[in-house]
Length: 161
Image (cartoon, rainbow, N blue to C red):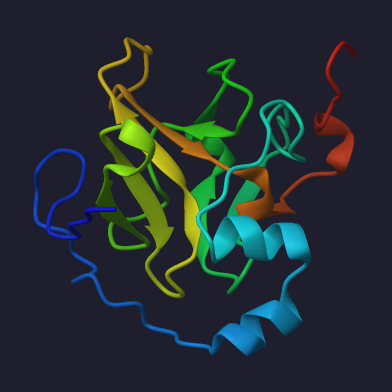
């Protein structure tokens, strides 16, 4: 895989300087994470679409990195893209995520990682025509996130409900 952490999806300099702020050993990650969390967060796996905990959630709150607890996204930037994964049009703040040019599996895309612990979150896509302020879709694995709700969880509903 060819990667570059030099620029964000808009071509601007990546403010995280490409270096995670927190480092743990592989053995520590394996001990702290479930098998699925480890596969996605540490091995850049992808959960199946429409199966994750947050793909269809409308609860207000902050989405944290499941591995280290860093606040990454909010429900204010979450939108229904109908792709099967939680979608956001921007991260919570500049520097909370880092970007890596990903050419794996014959695709040319931008991987999104937690800037604090370097865990894989998902990918960001530009110019798909969504009516959002950025026209970007941060397509993030639910298993990479933990939602801290600011209201009772009654705002969550299951598919078909």
